[in-house]
Image (cartoon, rainbow, N blue to C red; front, side, top):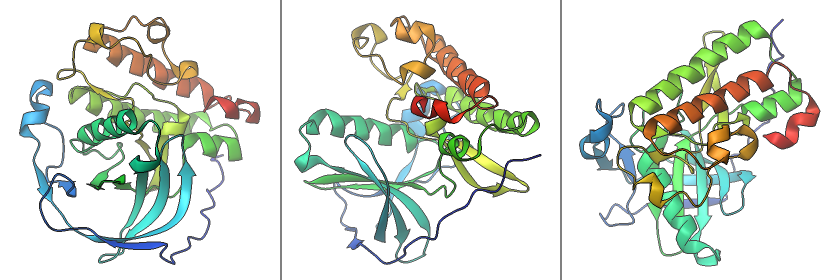
Amino acid sequence: MPPPSVHIPALDLTPVKNIKLSSTPSSASNTLLASTSCASSPSSVASTTSLRKLPFSYNRHQMLGKGAFSTVYFATNASTGEFMALKHLETARNSHTKSTANAMQKEIEVVSKLRHPHVVGYLGMTQDSDSIQIFMEYCPCGTLASFLNSFGPIPAPLMAIYTRQLLLGLTFLHHCGVAHRDIKGGNVLLAEKFGDVTTLKLSDFGSARELYTSPSPAKTRTLVPGTPLWSAPEVIRNECVTPEDWERADVWSLGEILQYSPMHTRADAHTS
């Protein structure tokens, strides 16, 4: 028997903030990916991806979640009514401003090049002297981890469908020369239903790296990325060096989701 339908709470559409993004081209401009996928060759992703300016107004509504350095809000496009998730970083108030802002910029560089049904969609960004905002596709059903915490284990036949979706998304990332490096239930979003089955999407690319354009791993191996409980042993041991190492580590983390989801209990909530 399939798990019960996810209850989506009513959204408060009263604008908390209405902002008109400047249409003046600048380094703090908004961008939207014009292409529909990554480049066909991993080594040429950066050079072949086309970005175009897209000024638009948006209404910011209630908070959806809060992390150590950023806050995610529900937002709507003021012109079209499109639902969006807005990831907001207050750079002026953050004691780790430089490193956190740089990490968010790298996240934007990665997600802006990706278009796939099982990867959360990037809609645009804006930046000023006090903050950085990333606009992402809104997935109303929350994360796989929260679903499991609310409804318990997923039956094997349904998990097989979800597994295929995640593998399609992960294969796409690796084809684009991108390693996610933090795959876990909390970074898998449940979007609208496609037919009779909810669509799963990989999200949160804060730990991701472009395997064929990043600096040599030997120079950047002091900090272990991702979440240890979901990481491959070689990641914990700081032994991932080649692109293939990171791709295999992603597959391990996805396997952890498969092992964890059918046997989930509420006691597992802290591992997400």
